[in-house]
Length: 134
Image (cartoon, rainbow, N blue to C red; front, side, top):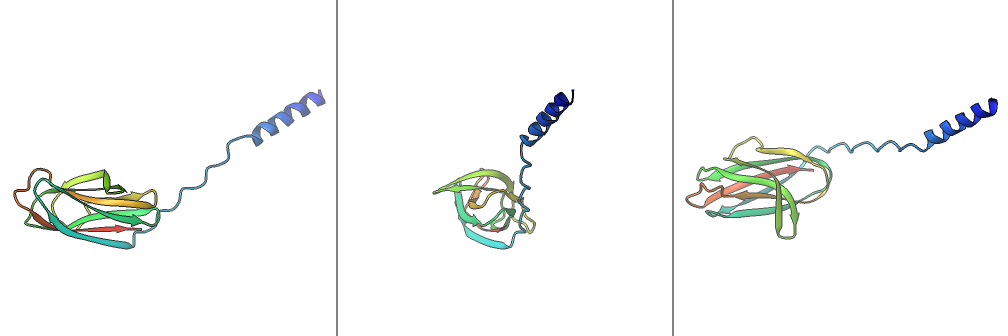
């Protein structure tokens, strides 16, 4: 009987040792401290893209700070691959002082911000976009 109990306890100990290891903790997002400012003129029915590099996992804030003349346009943020900007989050907005897009960059690397006509422009508009990131 003792031999049976010893065998069972040995198997339990062996099974416990074969469990999945605990996953590593998620990285703490860094506070965004890098500011990139992009300006240009957006033509009717067009899109402008601006690449930037995120150095570490952390917060992202995109603010369309100026748009002249006043209008509604689309702004988006995404991943930059070569000359392509694959937008993952976007919003239709006008200029303002508060960030129109906020989130967390979960990876470091090449990102991009895009501004585009949502079909409402009747003339070109001058814009300034500020991106705050880590």
